[in-house]
Each structure stands twice: as C-alpha cells, then as structure tokens.
Length: 126
Image 1 (tube, rainbow, N blue to C red):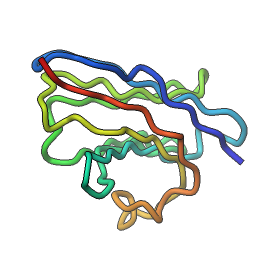
Image 2 (tube, helix red, strand yellow):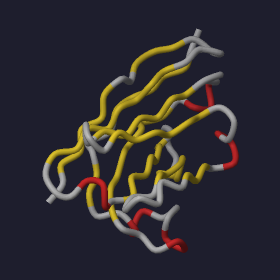
Image 3 (cartoon, one colour):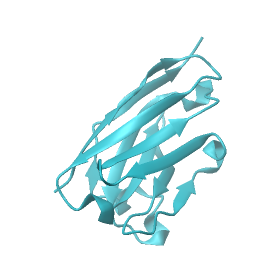
Image 4 (cartoon, one colour):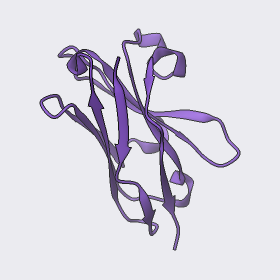
C-alpha cells in the first residue's frame, strides 16, 4: 500500500509559478511510476505528466504543459515534484498525484495507477 499526499497548491497570478509536492509513505516508492493529473471545473480528469520508476526515470508530459511544467523525483524523500511555470487560467484545476506500474500504453490513463492522493487546488487568477 502506498499513501500519497499533495501539497503546495494555492492561488497564483497569471505568469507565476508554483511547485506541487507529492509525498509518499509505505511501499517501495522507487519502483512506481508517479503521474500527475488535473481536473478543471466541469471537466474530466486528464493527464499532466509522469515520471517512470524502477530506475527508468523517463518523463512524459501532456502537450499543453511541455516547456512549462517539470517533474522531478527524490526517491530518498519519497517525493515527486511538479514545478509549474508560466501559469495561465487554463491551468486552474484540482491536481492529483498517482502511483502505479502502468505499461507504456496506460501511462496517460487513470486505470494505470493504483494509488491516488486526495488532490490539491491550483487557482490561477489576477
């Protein structure tokens, strides 16, 4: 079992930055792929990005965040980070981190992940 807790959300002005953290407890964290998803008001939850586990440490991003968002992981701290730069109103959403061992074709899909955090709000507004 893996428990995930997100932190670092809040209100930020357009063009600003935030860093979300996803802290894990339990399980063999380094083995897991950790993904970030987000759900905007009235919309479905969608993939943002992911970092592979088990030493792969490859990174995948949704097109709209490439070049603005960066994922990193610190296995010693059992934490994955989502650095978000140049935020805009379309980034406003509830952000979730998730852990699992998805095959490549499931990397961007919710069923690929077994464990989820409770979500944290990010609001981009002036």
